[in-house]
Length: 136
Length: 212
Image (cartoon, rainbow over all chains, first blue to last red; front, side, top):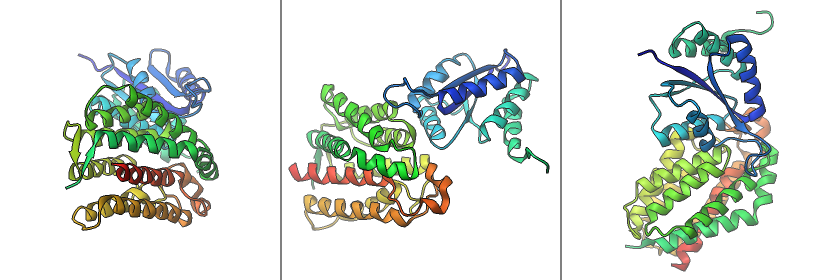
């Protein structure tokens, strides 16, 4: 059985998460399973922000995917995701990736689109910390 | 040996919700200084929902109540506070016997599980300018109090005063965790809002225990 790998982008802002997905799709193709999660002005009084329930809704969209990488923006996106993982016992299925959101998502998605494993994609995403943007 | 009844536990959360509601703008203003100005509104919304859920719940145990509070906070409070209070209360629930009244030792033990969950999830230690600057020393105090001669209500009033002072003490700290950490030295000079709402929890505990 082949492993089906997906990505979840978790941000305080839904628009920011959707923007990352838009960019990643342009570079890595439409076949990639990637979900955007984040707060928006219409989300229950809270506006911007993210909680564990929102992360679980996003993960539900990736039902059938057995290896999922999570990429997030700042602090509480990771707290909400780790709470969601613990709540549903998803430690084996969902991996939190510590990488810069845009660069890491691109590296991760491109690795997956070239048939890389989630482990390889995570390594590529983490390597994004090392890549300078201007000069050396 | 004193105990904690379900009615007292519910009273504690009712009082906590009221304190946060009354101080919503204070908490928002503190958060505006070093965060995104929503800690008060966020906690207020979640606690209102949690109290509503408690009032509607026919369950007859503290454990079921704590689980309900945890699930409600996790799904209604955004950000770090929701994840921390939510998952902390789920661990609190799991550590309690399933009964309408538990011993004070059981309650303190469950609070220990709550604090441990917060440490694990948030990875903050004392001095990082977070809610742990209240919960960690409070846990030490409340455990020491177990064998103390002082009456429970009196010691909880004292603990609530200490909690407020510990929260005040975060003013001079430089944030090491949470969004305020990006501010570095500039985060000093403001009380951490998460520590203040935590101090309100101990004020609510003192009030509820005093009524028991």
